[in-house]
Length: 283
Image (cartoon, rainbow, N blue to C red; front, side, top):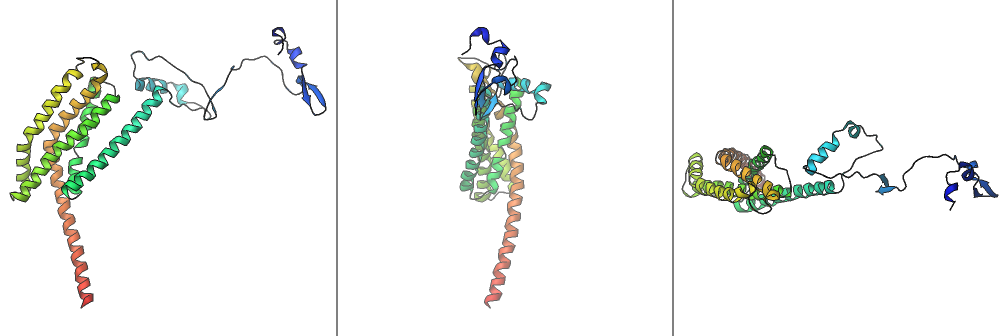
């Protein structure tokens, strides 16, 4: 190593000898010598140079911080050779949402197949599944109204709502089908009777879950602040799904029943024509 006093002497550095094919050469013959500032170390991620900027979040959620970081014009007009990628808590949040989307889609598919086995078809299970957006919309709506963050507890509350909303729809649809099959009632009369008799257990379930979640939503109790988004999501989803299921699900039931009858007529004609053609060929 050079002496510290010689490290700023450009003439001394330029005269340093470097090995060559035939002996040695001064460094100035193969390099330009100048003073400048460079990083003392280089970090790489996936073999690309990386610079990490960290900040302490005070009174901000990760999503709000990400939105603020993405807004400056310098970030929006980055050169093509420079990209911004989340890391740390932002990366974990992204992985969380990806896992939640996979859990939601898997749960919907499994629920559809279970209902198809229960009702021996896919038409009326679709009626039951249409109640899920009602609960999810109410959950996100109340979260936005109260200013609560969309965190892991809130996502857990949305998953809980899927089961409750599906259960309410199953009560209505199953009773209406049983009334038409066993009592011989007309479709509209069966739906009105199902809504009247199943409204009580649906409302009781909503009131019980809402009352249980209310103290957490108000921030009462230990560690209630971190669990408050879950309670708010559950309460909002329960209110919307209960208020709309008794009106929305019967309407969808009528539409799907008409589609089922139309498909039965079309398939019956197709199969009937096929059997007649086979009979003529046999004769």
